[in-house]
Image (cartoon, rainbow, N blue to C red; front, side, top):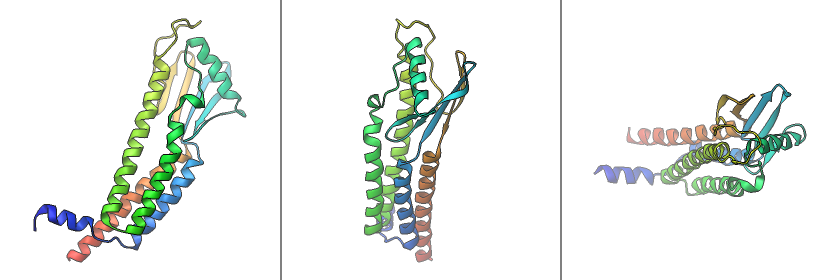
Length: 208
């Protein structure tokens, strides 16, 4: 039997209850992640001792202090020539919730069909979605810090807000870290990888 035939045979093998249960858990966690903030940016300056906070969800932006912080951030952005933060400008908010739902359906389909191939497809699609989302977030931060208006009252050099960690920007200390939704997605990744590992163990037991 050739390597291709062995691979094809493995991909069409049924998976047991363990991988299916992990896929079901992953689908439920995706629904939970939609309702939680994925990322947070907090800015401190002498005039903002308590900080200005911005939570990023899969579908919207939420400013701290009852939404007032996002107004303050946009006011500061105006002075340095940055675009105002607006939900309408984030195309990601239009497709990300649907992507979460589509992935959950892919996971449920893999449970019903129950083969290694469907499980593998679920893992690959989710990892691609995660990698593309992080790239899109980083690119958006880059564009916001580099597309500065030349007519701004305050001139600053183009910059990239931090995607992760700390950065000093003018007189602001900016912190950027994942929040609960991203940690839930990390658990989804672990659940999917564990499902693949269980399926692989099941194959080895059959061969033994």
